[in-house]
Image 1 (cartoon, rainbow over the protein chains, first blue to last red):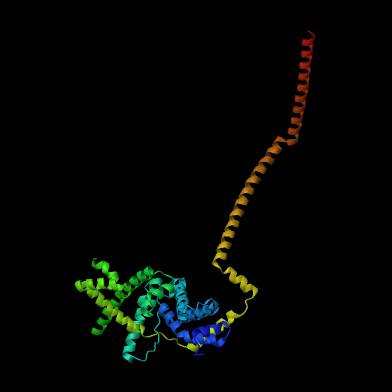
Image 2 (cartoon, one colour):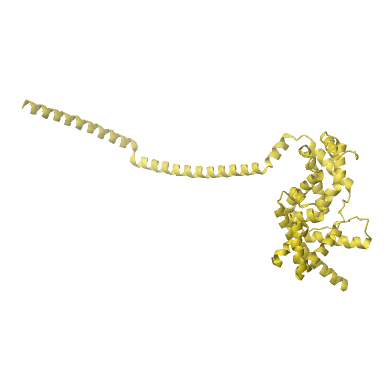
Length: 190
Length: 170
């Protein structure tokens, strides 16, 4: 299964192969969770979104366009689900509930890991002050490293609109990060 | 271009074209405050890069996998007739349509009851007038007057013919 191309796996999944569907989930769930978590800052909500995203992917697999990458399609599903969630009354209520998440990264030392984890959590908190669209653009462009064209495709926005949202998001994040470093430097000096 | 116009370009430096970058770089080499802002942004971008290298991981990937497969299997089952109706009613358009129909029905019922009240009011007046006028008497009087009118006409006609004949004989 691992040797098959994604097109072949999709074809097998369309044919009703449970193994192919399982493989698609296993292959993409980590990445899907990472994106959803960055949007929502909460592991429970992120898991719910990932579950719904794969169900939608499964249901609409027959509409899949082979010219588009599967990950791009999954990005679109997750981004739309997260935006709907953030715009919903429940999502607005959950906006500030950022949980401390256990992240694993083997290439850096434990002190650095703690610092990076702390910064990551703080970025989540700072991003919760952005509008859903600004947040989406910031996550996809700055945290997921997608190109402007890809962001445009995923969010169905014009390049101008993406850049405008990105400008406001970066400006707000920069102001908040500046405050964060000022306070953390003060704590260190004490 | 002044510094405020360059602010947006500094924030969107990665998205600029080569020509735009050149113009911005030229301004940065001349303007100290913009250079300081750009330096701060670069520093923050480096911090974000470091933070983003840590990917959030699922607590229990196998459990999530089981949840997805179980939900998909449940949703894959054929829907009952009731589920079909329920999902149809769940559409926003259907909800709005039902609301509009309900509103129309309420308006129609309101108008209808008020119109009937008005009709009943007229009927009441008619009945009251009828009892006072005593319709049967009225009809009798009307018939009498008609009959008397007809008699007068015939008499007048007779008198007219008689007078005409008398003039002719003269």
